[in-house]
Image (tube, one colour):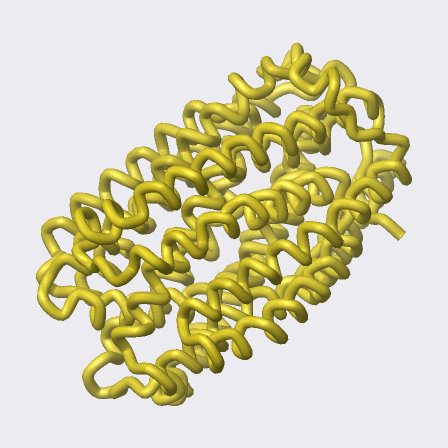
Amino acid sequence: MIASLRTLIGRSADIRVFSAGLLWSTFGTVIVRLTPMITTILISHWFGIEFVGKFGVTYGTLMSSSLLASAGVSLMATRNIAAYSINDPATAGRLAGMAFLLTGGAAALIGLMIFLFAHEIAGRLLKQPELASYLQIIAPAIVVNAMNTVQTAILSGIQAFRTIARLNVIFGGLMIALVPVGLYFYGLSGSFIALGCAYLGGCLIAYPAVVAALRRRGIEIAFREAFSQWRLVTRYAVPALLASLLYEPVNWICTAMVVNNPDGLAQVGLYFIAMQLETLLLFVPQIVVQVVIPMLSTGFGEADRRRVINVLGMGIGTNIAIAIGFVVVMMTFGNWFLVLFKLDPAQHWPIFMIVVLAAAIIAAALPLGQVPVSSGYMWTGLSITAGWALTFIIATWFLQDRGALGIVIARAIAWSLQTVVYIGFTRFAIGRTCGEKGTLLRDRDLSTAPAKSASLDA
């Protein structure tokens, strides 16, 4: 009886943390995610589909470069700050400091390379020389966007979802206020300059909020001794960085294959619009993942099989429900979405139907994709991502002559195979890491006293 009561209380605590985190994260993220879609709609109406392609390639370069600089460090920060924040705040502070330093250095280097080699990238790789000026404009924005990403990761590690929501509302407001104005008066160049200004404003506002949120938990950001935690870089950040090297640029590589073909810009524009639909479907499932990561890290850190299964069940169940609802809506009202972007439903509907079905698969797989990170099997996660990347590139190569349709089919194939692999690995990780309560963990040397509870910031 007492054991059952304890189990119920534990489940209720997890449900409260999950629900509150999902609510606040969704509230804050919706405005940020709407801006690229609004910009795409405006470009399609004001300038045409080829300009959507130009925007898509440049914006994709910005996002891929930013995530390349920050993805590995962000995963390391979220996972390990969640583990250390309660019982070892000094280590959590050093981890936060190292995350800032590594992300800033990597982003500055990548931004500089893109600025210096913009003409070579645009002319030789993309076969679109007119994109060079846009690439130079977005180079500085790579740095501030990467810093925004790592600051959000740190807040996610301490489960400060309410703070994240507030910052995203401010950031989204800046984007919606500035980007359409820049687009209207100065075209694509103006939109990218305005986007960079919004990123900079968001970064400057976010840093004091991050410092304050950490201090409320007794954590001080430490830069001087930050690299004393370097072993976490080799165990977590390096494989996560390599995974981002595979995952993020592969979208750019596949897009580059298509843009080099006749009518390539129009096809990339069509693909970019299709990805806006995928973003719309996945925006809540990706927020679910942000909530799941620290909770899974705590569950695996405690070798608590029941908690891990409960958190995965909540995450997967929520995402499947969202996916089913979205598929039904798109089957019923999908033509309106195409008309919104001045597309012909009769001609383009097959592309978007494939995207909808693939996004539903991705939504269900996203929580499973966090198991390698949370359980400490980072190098295995890297291998799984490498398989996805290879599948996506090979399939796109064979289907590139079919333009946007070919790349969305290739993407669907890659995600379907990766989902099967994630299911098998999740069964293995739970059995191996959580097989016996209180056994020695794979990452015991990194966290001798992981967090025993989770809390939301006031």
